[in-house]
Length: 307
Image (cartoon, rainbow, N blue to C red; front, side):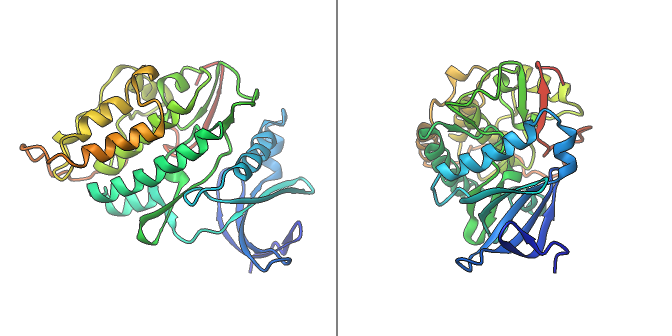
């Protein structure tokens, strides 16, 4: 039993995990009997960001989540404050994070990666049509349950069309999954999420992110200046057509990328009809995660485009 007995009117059953921002609990709504996940922000974390930006983003995550109703997006039910502690009440999802699954398995076969991408792109299509850009799509923000069913979560830095919080020159996101315009501190649109989805596809198929480095600057240089090795040269079971999909998804200029999630999805499904490359690819021996001075799963906030 958690030492915390109650948050708001929710009875706390146990602690589910602890992150950089706070603690996540399993609780019960006494009105309905529904079991929920309750994500909290630590008072100390809020105090460190005295401009109120942490609480603003946290509140926006709740408000944004309540706008979205999709089977592949974690449902958000409630938001509140209890003393100095803010909390979001969400759907309780049984499963594990996709990044943990990838660490266990190294990589996913093409058929499984395609299934995950079909769900992700459908969820992003729903989000984007409602004017919500996630801006931090990555495996550690994807819950996976039985049958590889996924749920996108953590809209804490999402941008809505009406939002003025994020200005030009402010970088938010996870460096290894951030688009060039996002790293450059520009205002982003839905195509930044599609870039991140392309990074995630590459990562699921190969076991490695396409752009890596030991610092923010090194990752940014890789994103701006390098091209990843083609999937067909690395993965024996991937169809040859996936190379063109990755190339377009990770185009440096956003006007050269897929312009919406549905276009990306149709291209993936078309690529799945092609045969694997005759070269057969290399049977990868998956090594450790690339070494970073910053946590590769951490969301960063960088003012005026400076790491």
